[in-house]
Amino acid sequence: MAGTIYRPQTEDEKRDFRDIGPYKKKDPKVNFLTDLANKRSEKTKQKIPFFKKAAIDDYEEYYKEEVRKSIKKNGYMKPEDIKPIKMDWNKYSSPDNIVLVEITVQRDSYASKKQPFEVFVRTYRYKYDGYGEEGAYNISIMEDEQDAVKRLKAEYENKEFKETSKAEEVSWLYDRKNINPNKPKPKLKL
Image 1 (cartoon, rainbow, N blue to C red):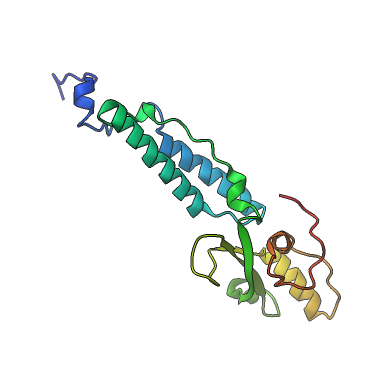
Image 2: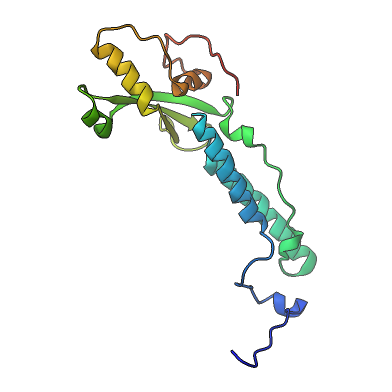
């Protein structure tokens, strides 16, 4: 567009205007969601349950309060007034807040096609305290396909199998209801 002049908005114009152009800096919510995705990915790789809904709810509560303060102070919301939040990420994967609800077995049709036996993968279902209905679960962690195949292959060949999967080891930390009564003492700490 020839002859178009671009200029920064005045403070008065910024109140009613939202810039949809490329961001020069990330806003606090984008930073939070990036950190949340990184933490969730890290915990998923470790087979540790991580409840992202509680983290999002905590952030939303904080954000609403900061917006309210900014509006009270300025008469409108200034994004630079919102301070970055320091989250305690361990809270959302802590055995104090999460409990193992059940262990289920699910057939893995893809892995079963490659083996001479049916492959069943264990799914560990957890509940975050304060969320959802009683007896329901919020989080599921599946054991790796390779662990299930090793376990079932040993069973298929009538051999003893003593290994435990990472998902099973982690489940021992969260088993307050004693769902798995034959569990050994947990080896790992969070």
